[in-house]
Length: 295
Image (cartoon, rainbow, N blue to C red; front, side, top):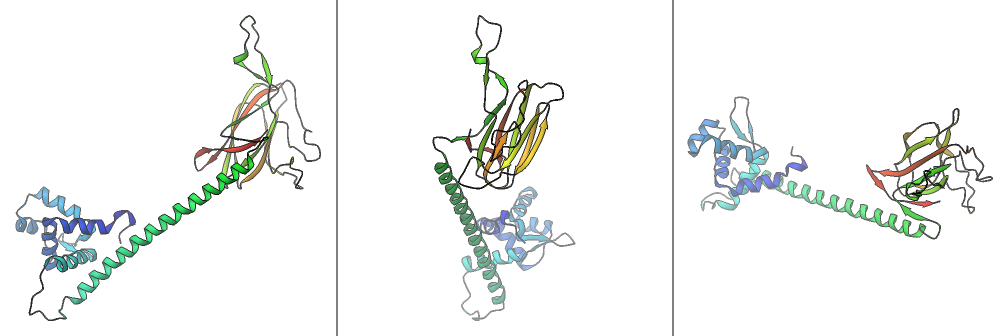
């Protein structure tokens, strides 16, 4: 049976358009023929015959003894060709012996047409459904972005102090240090996505670690009674890359000092001598995707 990619209807009409392929189909409708028999009857080169046989595709097939014959779709093509090009005989009975074959050919062409229409309809439905989902996500983004939120494709948290190369004083040998955010709340708009975390460590004292945690929910939204359970955590001691599965869309908290609690949001473990930064992105269907951040 043809696959959707083969487009059998294209092969049928392309074959009927070429006179050499029509001759080959007529010859094979009479009886099975070998390559040499077809070559002798047509009077063309073997390379040209090979080319035309290959372009007939699934309209012809080979028998066990190496001869060529018509397939079911080849018979359909011959039936279509007969109705278009050949003039009926005046004395031919109304119900000839070829009637069953003509009906089979017509049904095959109709089935092909129905399959094509069904495939086109399904593709249009999928496209419309995808556009609808993207539109709803865009509306969701617009409603969330406000004075305290922003849309990002990447966000960075810092623990302790971060080197700021752009603020180096030319007359000083020291590098100016700046303090950055230790946690953030993000809104992930996609189901079955991945949170990509890249941790870069500058200094970590011996026997110390960075308690990175990811929680599902937003403890800062006092309108809901939500505890924001921990879905992933690690005590990091060196530069690393982490991938955290986000099974559902919604709010998530990423923290560099342990879990953020609703009763005591800023209670956590923080060592002043630790200097590091962590960059976070969301991967959806293999691509980095935008998300909402509340710092």
